[in-house]
Amino acid sequence: MAKAVPAETHPSHSTAYLNAAKLWYALAKTLSEQAAWALSMDRMLPMVSINAGLVLGSRVTQKYPALTMFYLKGAVEMYENEVLAFVDVNFLADVHICAFEDQSTCGRYFCFNQIVNTEEQAFKLAQGLNPLIPLPTKGKEGKGSKMHAKRLKTKKLNKLVENVAIY
Image 1 (spheres, helix red, strand yellow):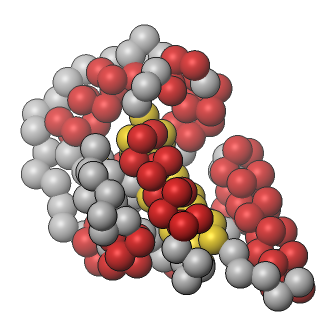
Image 2 (image 1 turned 90 degrees about the vertical axis):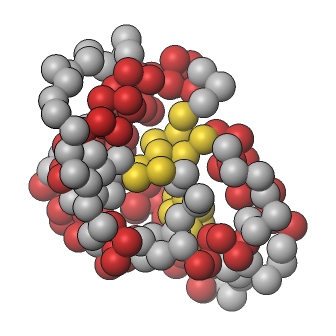
């Protein structure tokens, strides 16, 4: 099921943090979104921001390996904080269409299909990204955690895409 995250509540969305961590791609996206929101407010225009997790499917990672690698630069910390997420490209396209078609849609959405929070899920993700990234040595199955449930909200995005097939 797709999820929505209150992105502004997570410290990794601070420009100071992104700069210190040298996460240039995430910093550029954050600054761009902040500029877009400022323009939207100045011009009193409604705005929707759909921030995707790692986009997978339809050979996306093979066609755009640099974007995948930029996203994965912070993957270890995202995994440790239980916010490493990915989304199927077809579902992401459907979310954009739903946001466009529903004129009441506004605000920020973090769109993803799954959170990687066990070693088994991380290994499976790495397998899907091979040969772009080397496969790690497979560890024993992690027990996972329910902590992400407190950090991630689903209601807003689920309402937007309630009639969209889940990929």
